[in-house]
Length: 274
Image (cartoon, rainbow, N blue to C red; front, side, top):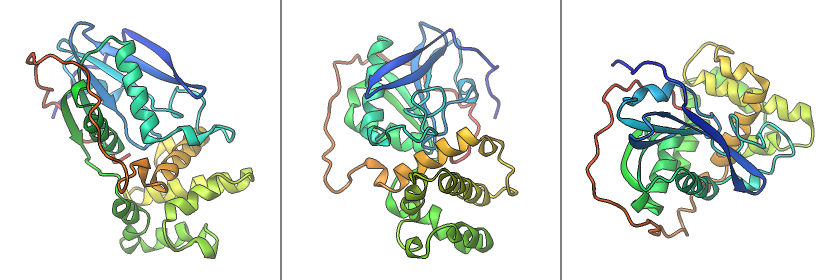
């Protein structure tokens, strides 16, 4: 399927969201068009220009952002002293609401891929009045069985890569949630340990695509590699901070309009899982 032509943002900025964090955002397309929010995957991938092209720029006001700690947002998760305790699903949802109000948007279409589909669904559950439509692709749930499949189950299909992946962990850490075990290494005070763990994690991510070793260009950037591995394992190792057993979904929506709006274009291409 085709894509719309490449476009550049007509506005962008850094939003103060609290906890010392500033979130990068940009808007593209028609300033008076239907608002559409793009939620990237990872978590920790950051937004790219590509999803701008999923939407008709004449009809949509396309909003993209780099979620806390990644892309152009600050502080960056690649920095050891960045506080990851204030990077959770609840924090990201609060950031979305701050951005919606900053941009004076009453309701927006929410589009999410992979982790973005998890975040988009939880956002729609907790703020239904702010969401006019929900469009999800590369759908995930953020469940522990999914994490177990990605971090361990696929080892049956890629045994050599899995053996190398597990070998980087201490023997006592090779059972249970492997993402949590890797996150403990990535949070080590030893820089060499952190860097080896981040490299091993992204080598595994590459293997299960599947793609040739060290062929994913973004993982060859040390800053991106550390940010991505740290953020993914932070979420994977903590049930994506969804609190399934105890959290009660609440409705926090604002007053909304029932005005009809155009549907998103069918011109969409599949994206990678992260």
